Amino acid sequence: MKFTISKNILLQNLTYVTKAISIKNIIPILNGIKFELTDKGLSLTASDSELTINTFIEEKEITKIEKSGTIIIQSKFIVDIIRKMPSDVINFELVDGLKIKIFTDNNEYSLNCLDPKEYPTLKLEESKTPLIIKASIFKSIITETSFAISNQELRPILTGINLKIVGDLLECTATDSYRLSKKNIKLDSPVKEDINIVIPGKNLIEFEKMLNDDEENLELHIFNSKILFKYKNILFQSNLLNGSFPNTTNLIPTEFEIIAKTKLADYFAAIDRASLLTQGKDQNIVKMTIDDGKMVVNSYASEIGKVEEKVVIETSDKAKLAISFSAKYMLEALRTIKDEEILILLNTDVKPIVIKSVKDESLIHLILPIKTY
Image (cartoon, rainbow, N blue to C red; front, side, top):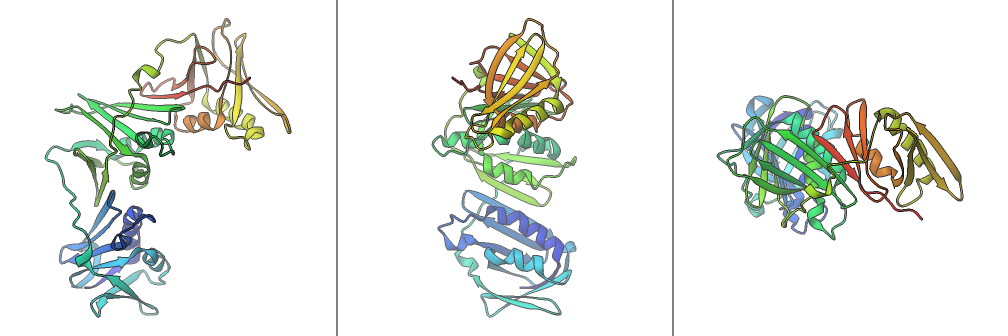
């Protein structure tokens, strides 16, 4: 193997594939990145057996290909080495079988490598009928829901995002049982068979970082136990989570006793300021009171003091309710809404709080209240 390549091109692709390297790897060979060079280009692959990422750099993007070959380069240092190389163009040469020389005119690294024969065979299969969606749309779906996934392994299914497609309606849901986020979008064409899968949330969050806000198509190749995303020169394959995602349809109320409209920026700022006194607390609780057509958000910490914020709202003069909730959960939900005005939908102090955009009905956030005594 011998080739010369632009530092920036290689670094970008290495940054993608290293997201599949896990510190929990118990198979030493999977701590490496597979470099596979042919006369058509350079393929980079990394995997932790549950997540596999491959990128392909075409021959036209490589400065010079002198000799093809395959090698496994240990991932621990390679990204930092490439990032700190002083030249814009970097040379690679395989010497002595399992040693790679990485050099420019002024510096040189020699790294011990791993035997490619020991690297497992990874199948990155594509289906005949992939689901096609704009990358920008899928990126926003992940952004708007992934914050609500659970970080607790007690219920592994809740660490994932539920992707459900019936006909031409795609429904994406995440919940940790204390809050819920649901996004619905209309597809350009219906699917022939209904889809109901759960994708590990941490994998989707990493994939979202690779997507641009562009009109490029993203292909979803869905199988029984895995999903393959194909985007530009990236293949991103993740295992699916086993088990059934809870039916959340009945959790979201359809009728409300109180509907309050307010400006997103004002409501966000009020909760943000009110939560300052409770930041050291586990649940970061603030209290919202609606009475006589007015809203007050307040918090109290016995050892510090109290804060009170008034928010201008539009609601019925008869509306009256005091409800407490996690400021952290509310702020995370509000950050995903892009419109200027929101609806706060309420029933009683023990029923869920529902947040929607005034203009966009496709996104719904639900937050359970916290009973304070």
